[in-house]
Amino acid sequence: MIGMFDSGSGGLTILAGCRALLPHQKFLYLGDHARAPYGEKTPGQILDFTRTMVGELFARGCGLVVLACNTASAIALRELQENWLPAHHPERRLLGVLVPTVEALTGLPWDRDAPGLAENCPASVGVFATRRTVEAGTYGREIRRRAPTCAVIEQSCPGLVSAIEDGAIGRNAAQDELTALVGGFTKTLLARMKEETAGPPAVVLLGCTHYPMVEELFRAALPAATKIVSQPGVVARALWAYLERHPHMAGGGKDETSLHLLTTGDPAAVIDPACFAPGGLPAFERLD
Image (cartoon, rainbow, N blue to C red):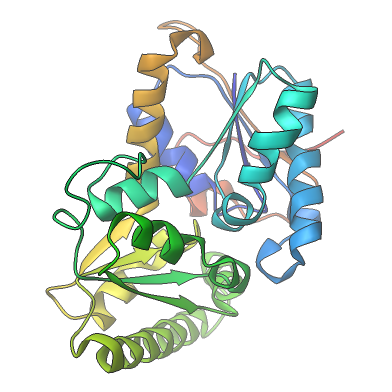
């Protein structure tokens, strides 16, 4: 199986993208709902929680785990890849959403020595993300390493994840709240971008796996010429390419498919997976 981990349910948008491209792949999804959202936790907590949850997926037979969470990818991925995996799970692999997203934003491979660094990258990039992802500064740092002249503005969106989940379960007035939040965060980013570049961003990233659920609100609030990069398709294509290069990490077959969703929280209180990825998703089960 391939494991997929998120602090909550947002990673289901990534899972849906991956299943669309890899319909016969076995997936095991784990959401740490009992401790969500990670965007407000300390970096030390995020690292500890992520390591524990990835360990659970390894223990259940996953040889490859995808961190379908921008906060975990920005805060914990490098430490786990460079130190924890070699020491404790050298035969396992751990991927995140950050690398394929930076490649999509810049039009360049992850290799920072690739020729023509500034030629393929947009002049300006806006990033909407959680507070911890923004504070980590990983997107801005990695984009500028490849295109030093690119202007990158990272905008945190406090409260947006909770509002998205409230909207998905039909809470009254949630749509008005979502529209107001997205409009406010977008207005702030555009003002900051204007001060730095005298124009709107060429590209914006929806840098939280919840945000694709309200992509149409971002689209309405952004200039028509601004391109939106949303992660489900980007990560799915990257995973497909990885499995092409490492077929031993794949699992499943034409007549053998499975999907299980686990949660550290109360399955009865967790948002219906169909809200994130309509069709074909089972209910969450409690992590034993």
